[in-house]
Length: 437
Length: 68
Picture 1: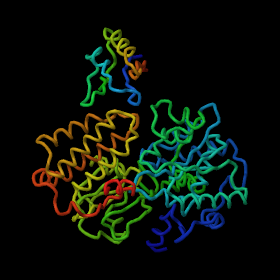
Picture 2: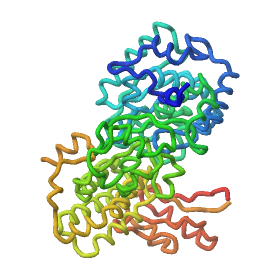
Picture 3: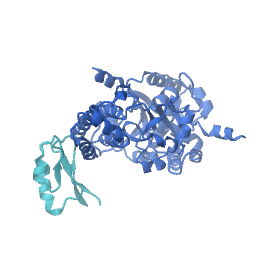
């Protein structure tokens, strides 16, 4: 066996056999990944459930929604509650720069549904709710078809339903999702109680990102040792990553944790221009200088010294031609508009920061504005019911650092020619319309 | 067990009474919302803390007992 062949069987895992169009049917899914231990309506035994939890723990699987919490710990917390649990597959994906959850739901729904069904059995739940964004028509239609295929084969022993969630940045935040599923306003609530204690219908609720569930579908089949054959000690396995920006073939890639970013960019056809800066982890993430593109490795351990992480698996390469100040100003305004509007420090703080950045861009800011922004970014931290202000100020503080020269130039001279270029950072259409109006 | 202050940021409406009644532990930010000292409430301040919590019009100031 040549080295290439060895490489070829290592990856892809989740994306193995992904169809060019439409979704992978149940029969093909079972041919590629084999039958589940619990497939075709077979009742899950208590022993199987304990075994799966152990496998997930040994695998070292952590959550793929951005918070990177150990999955087995979360599942055990739900399992030990007395009341019957509910499992929620979180595909809300409010992060504009992330596409991986929609891809999984549109193309590989049976991986997600297998994982959800297994997780439900493992925590003693009889119901699985799959959450998709209201605008994600393709994902919703695919799920409906996939569920029909599974019903025909009597494949699941849990009841599964699909719920649409608002197209908002915070819709997938755990307590906001619980609020929405309970027919509430769908905004974050004060925790505790955590969803694992009291969630949907006041039941203990396991909320897992859809990619996390897809990994569970594979761990249940191939085991924890197989899972750990890829990745780093601290972060075993593979991950889905949305790579976009100044990249020849932007899209969703499956990589091994710890893979060099340079290799990924090369596999994606290379950069379309010099890279000015990298945004890691999305709009609650961290900007880093573009020159690091050839040296960074994509794992939590290796990014931590830079104060960065991958969040829900996002790398965005900003081109040399873009204006870092304009891009920062637009996203910061959007983040301030995406506040749930409940907590004063978030509502007022993010608005003040966004306005100050707009003034810096316009060259109309009073002296001391940069110091004021710095003061406000530390002032709003950890003062919301959810982590939205924390993420927003991480984005802003790292932007002021990486684009320091550009900010100083704008403060002095006002907008630069590149300010008028179209946004490279994706923002939902609603905001763009509002900005144009 | 130690006693801590916590504000419910969702119900807080920046009336600011807490900072008046317990300036030793509560200051206000640029928009009038309380910034809470995260250290345990000293025994001699406990009565003031309770008074501040009771005075809050939205009952957003919480006094919590925590395991060390």
